[in-house]
Amino acid sequence: MTGLGAPRVLVSIVTHNESRDVERLLPSLFAQTFRDFSIVAVDNASEDGTRATFAAFEKVTPVPLTVVPSRENLGYTGGHNLAIDKAVNAGIPWVLVLNSDVVLAPDFLERLLDEAGRPEHARVGAFTGKILRAEGTDLTPTAVLDTVGIRMTRNGRHFDIGAGLPDDGRYDQSAEVFGVSGCVAFYRTAALADVKIATGYFDGDFFLYREDVDLAWRLRGRGWSARCAPAARGWHRRRNLPERRREMSLSANLHSVKNRFLLRINNAGRDHLRATFGRTFIRDLVVVGACLTVERTSLPALHWLAENRARLVAKRAAIRASRTVTDRALLPWFTSEPEGARRAGA
Image (tube, rainbow, N blue to C red; front, top):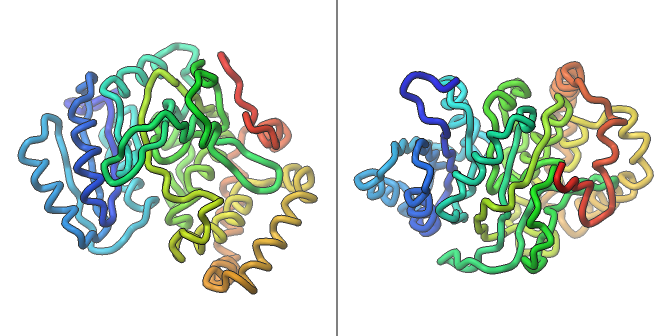
């Protein structure tokens, strides 16, 4: 139930030196046909004028807009956790988590809420729309797919379903997916509260990169599902792609390495590890070998995992103890098929 005077949706935005993107994202939110929402923007110590941009929009915003300035970079996880906490404490039933490099169709929230409100979707904890690619500093919309959900593989990797493909109608049917990408993710706050751990709703140990996959896995482990509602459309400028690894920041690469292992430490039980060991071990050797040779800047990720071993094991035990769905039940979602285990019409 929504708290007295609270909106139905809280939109959470986290920024770090993204003034130009904010100038495009906020108008697309202000133009939404669904109006019962508020915005919380956490700015992670920006130095490019992002806060001045928010200040200008605060003077003209048609919906409640709260800007939370942080003197330190809290990361994707820390920023969104702060906003999610506000939603949970206020009794707001839905949180829309957004990257700043996103624009949304005017009926995006309306379409998502239509799907989310169906009685048969009461145990769906996360939704997304059909998210297409945006290009350039103007976030120019394209007809190329970015994500219609997350797919998992048995070698420890994960991908966005449909990424890079033309929008030719193949994903126009609503479908169940393993989880949703954190660039545009619509969460039921009851589900987020259900899977919250000591390090937050998003696991703060991830900081950035793969945190959305960890959350998806933890939601699955507690019996929550995820869906794509393709009638809700948005556009996202994808910066980090596997084929662009050498163009990614040193920080992003380091966290990517750390979080590859952290993802399994948190979520993979014995049955999962047994079923996937042959494929993950080979990939792990490649990753560790790269850290020792061509990408030595990511070597501190392995040191961090070793130094925090005892705490991570304790966190894993708490996550595993709360699980209501077995590894074996989740294994069908881990597949090499490009569609993942997407279940259309489910």
